[in-house]
Image: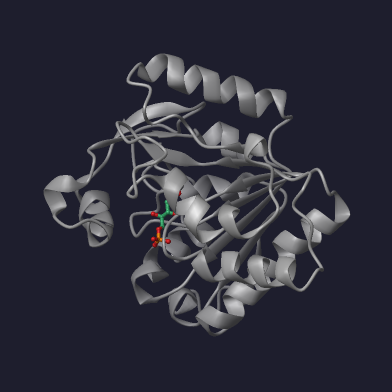
Length: 245
Ligand code: F6R
């Protein structure tokens, strides 16, 4: 794992946007795995700036998002698909046909997940997968468990994730209790992985991800087995890793 301390959220976001932009420059029709959440917002703003200045072209880029709430349509302002349109896709020249998010509106969980797995496999998996990390070490919606997950599947969200995500909803009761998420194996199939993390509340998860035992109780710890991972953080997220890297 290559750990990069960028000191601030702004510098972390610039570095992540640099890495994503470099991937697009190197392979204009690359497959990007994308994440929602608060952490990557600055990285997406960086990509939009580069597009607006004419240095980045999304016309051939294909994207596969990690996850979606079960039961929300892509028009629902709380859906991850809506978030991605709002934070990135509506502001760059990506072809909507090249954008993929698990279909939260498909109530048939097995079909929705199998379809998504087939699509990601047909695309040849991700050239670069962007990840945030949960306070409990989750990646995508792969929550702490007794075993690592494999393909796309339906999950029951943990209380800590529901509580963390409730800040984006009017009331905690409004947070959906289930989601469809890419599995750990699908994430590990990406050729390169970029994890972004900022803030003190991610410090323990970052330490466990990079230096803890490789156990499904910390799903992100499996990234230690991937040959090509960048962990890009601010000072606070790396505060429990001092002297370890
Ligand atoms: C979202 C996702 C989640 C988030 C994680 C961190 O697509 O995959 O694993 O990356 O919950 O969220 P934030 O960035 O809001 O702290």
